[in-house]
Length: 329
Image 1 (spheres, rainbow, N blue to C red):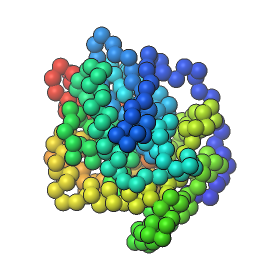
Image 2 (image 1 turned 135 degrees about the vertical axis):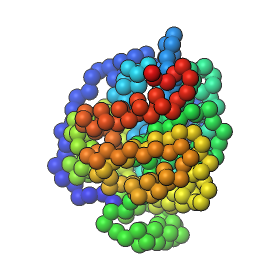
Image 3 (image 1 turned 45 degrees about the horizontal axis):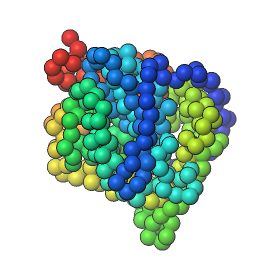
Image 4 (image 1 turned 180 degrees about the horizontal axis):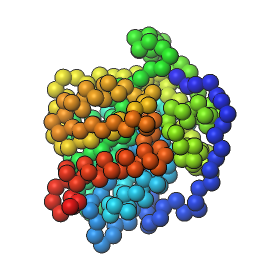
């Protein structure tokens, strides 16, 4: 549920050149005709591998320019995907602001096809996934169900289950079932709405990050290109995600993921269920959990001191988990 709007956070101007390295952007056509936008760095003569960045709900490629620079400095190539339904990829409803999804399987299929297409670019291995929130959920589904060349995964605040604020979970689930059964599948969920003042408010920032500069940058990007804006979720999206969360948590499912996986948890989390995250990570054969106590949900968009803790954990995990000549000494 969205909080009541408060004072808007001031927009922070962005540098004219977002990407401090050469990149290329293109579209992939999914099996059902949806267009998926992606961006990749232009390959250097040598690098440590390729990081596949999977953003969270309502996020978009441009928001990850700083993360891309961090990866570039670590000698990684990178690829970033706009999931269907957000960014500049295809959206299914006439009101582009509504975040709607019929089934999470569509996102898993898209990711499968996306990886198949990466082979065209001869990107350097190993492949490492870096995924946030909803992106982490899709990554886990993909790693459990599909054949993959991914060697390790780092997930920030992965969505293992939804945390409903201000309403009992059983009531929220029942409301979703009733709404979708009575023809409101494409309607906004309770408390959801178009992108606007609520999205830019200090109340919204309090859920996501303690850094007003990075929070403001996202909305400066949207002001530059309003097509990037996305509002709240529909009852259909909630139904699809709740179903997928049950699927992800079923006995024996997470145990299929045999590669090393690091989950980084936010201590001040209010959007995803940290307990469900902890329980799932304990079931992974090679799962590791790091908690950053002062972080809010968008760990990669947090203030410098928190981001430093994340990158320290990322570097240590990659050094230990990624084999061969690419591992750090």
